[in-house]
Image (cartoon, rainbow, N blue to C red; front, side):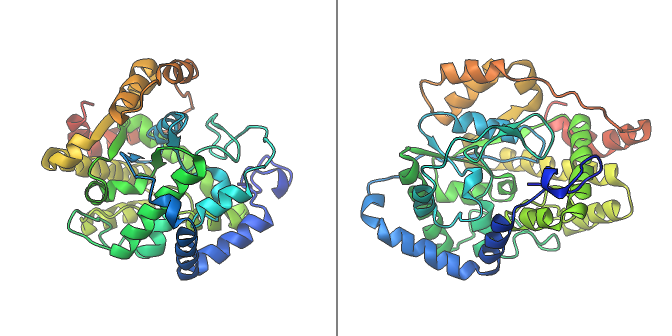
Length: 372
């Protein structure tokens, strides 16, 4: 992405700049979901014979709040030779993964660049990306309405989505010639039981981060994305269309069933109490997850909790546990290579002593459930 922000000379050199064609095509996909669902089914029919031979076995989902380490965990899992995933080049033509992968198979290698977040993560068009939310939005158009409960549980049913989604995963596996699927999907915190119903052998990765550092990172990213999107409206449109509402001008909290709490979070943000709103949000999300893990044996047995601090302090052991949980063998060399590149992030925090007190007040009870 790219945009005009302070310190940059032109929108073309800004990290938020969005070229015309991705913006134009992204608008077509976003405005006409029924057509793209139809086109996806047409693609499925065209390769139906080959799809029958491809099972969806133990799909892997990384689900947690943004800035919890989810991108790194997704990238590490996706670097395994057996794993297929969505990639940056798939936007916006996510609904036809097999045809689009064939069309882009011969793209020349690209020089890695730092992603827009300014967090040292280098990307190319082939890098893993969180894009499957576009499919969920096409079938559940109100899944990002903060005023409504966004939870999909084991008892919820949407046969048209279930069929389309499973075929989509099979097509992606076929396109990459892989046997396992992985996704970073932070909004799946509201859908874990639904996923376990769809795929009883699913593997869930739940990253969690100490609240003070986590909230400081969210504050930083929200300020940065809000500045960028004000200068480049196309970047705001891209975030909406790709299903990213974690920060920026269209930030939306996930509603996990407590509408009053969600309103309080929104009111705090609207009144300028940024830190309090984020602390309440952290506590709501991870309180819900702690309760779900305690009460739902199927979700609990499918899940591996990964602490951000463990990634930073013991990356090799953490990645070994990650691959073991996912039943991905012959991964020792990946763990060693990726562990060697892990660095604990060091960013200046603008949190005041008052902010720190607010965070501890709002998150203490939930943080203790996670050992913080």
